[in-house]
View 1 (cartoon, one colour):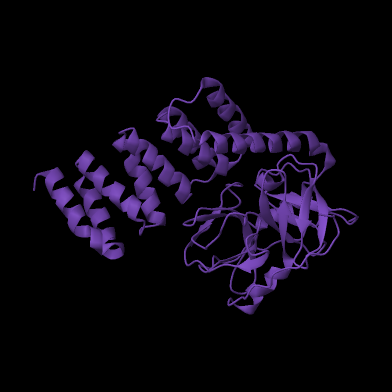
View 2 (spheres, rainbow, N blue to C red):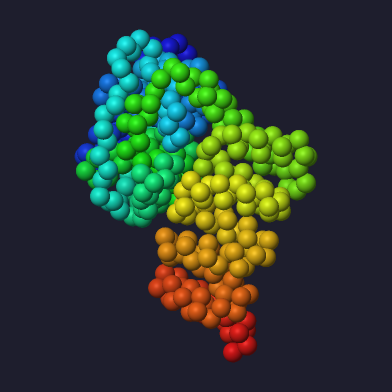
Length: 357
């Protein structure tokens, strides 16, 4: 495939509001030696994507909405958020430092990403849930939404119905997507400087090695070799990436290495205290390790964010029974009656047995 050549782009129908559909023209596909992802083009021509997409690669391949193929270079910065700015070859202007204004927390958000399977930019179904962090207190805290997203959409735009850029998609598991707030893009632009090149590359390398190691280690069911455990601990810690902290914690939990699981999930929690994904993973680790006293407050915090989650409600009922906590049992049963009434009968029966009623 020759850089600069034009390839046909599939035009996908868009049923979203017109300002949302307009973002398809600014979404690009990104190919690296490690993955296929998305990005968005700023007014200046620079491209924004995730740091975990850029990793430590000297350049990446871009395919824009018109089918043009070219290379772009990640620009070094020292901003901790999972963002990277890419300079397309031949672009001589300064890094875009446009100020993105925070939006008053719209509940309906759309992901606009490059759909690799359909070979073109695509607008996905809107979500109706979103939790917004305090971006000034926690620089790595994320917006959490149930807006639909697929593999390869990381780095895509997340916009509201009026077309305002709310954030950059970081990850999506089909349930809760994590989004880097757009207000951080300006700060990344301001903190871009060649003096950060070595540290930027070292962090990118740690992200790549951590992600690759977690992927290949996922096939191991139990008793991972000590050198592998050490490699995960060193590189995932050095990555400084909340998403990788979560994934490492989940993998150690799968291996029943609960101390290490808690260690990484608490790191993720420290960066993003209200992350549903982190809190659920931490609750599951405590549940498997039979630490109901630690699990209860985590579940209570989770249910305050997402009271309809069936797994959290089920765990809450079990924890209430284990702790003989009538107040928590009544609280969870109340949420079940509202959000999951089909499960109330079985949950009530469990509670009655646990309390000897």
